[in-house]
Image (cartoon, rainbow, N blue to C red; front, side, top):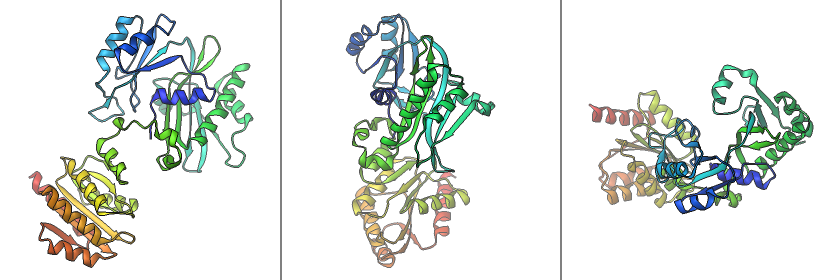
Length: 390
């Protein structure tokens, strides 16, 4: 789960990490009240969306007077920002962050994440922070420095100092950076984060270290115990179908193909998509209905799949363990009758109550292709899409 920049900075500030003076607003009247509170000749305006690349897309701008503030606000509020990290439709903008400008002496990059290869928290830092960091890092690996955190001892002060030396900090800057280093790892663990990224962390001309921009991602698997983080969840920034799926306990991810997939179990879902790709097809989605299913979940899952106008055929692949195949069959029948589905449906049932499920689908007299052979099911789905594309 992503946080907005202003939410991430609020969290950092609460834990003693310096950020620029700033206010978030969503109406013109708020703009008028807020702009007078920042005592600098210029301010930075930032569209609040869950995507990077805002600056290059025009969503971040330094302005020098109230007229320019109004113009920026009217240009973007209520619109959508398209960046190199969004789809073609972009992300909706309903909040803009206004911040004081900072006299920057040097920009740095700093992040905390899990190194999956070694299953340990890792801190990554560079003295080449800023908008071009990714391109610079690709061309010069030597600018990247890493510190691995021992899960038993936790972060150590000497590790923060070691990283500070590598980044070129001197005197009190070393202690200031080390405090940020320790605090970030504390925040990372306390809130079950997947990522903290500060880009840039800046050294000001007044010799202060300030977090100028930040990105925080919360581990979705921890949200049941992170109630404060859940309050910050902005569903408007999520894919509408994915947000709808979450409400019903379904794991759905929209893709670019035309074969809708409904499968139980993430591993089987991945294998199903791999098989479709292997035989020349394109999956339209990932949809794992899980183990604890109900007819309602099946109905909602099919509705979500069929809401995607690209879908030309639906492949249902169920291997019943905990899942009852007859319950899945009932959900398919109910949805087909409810929505008067015209899209072909191919169903592969195996395992728990598979024979009963197949019998129910057969008795329904609906136009559903039944099979126990997954390869046949995948090829049949691909054949349908090719016929429709002809």
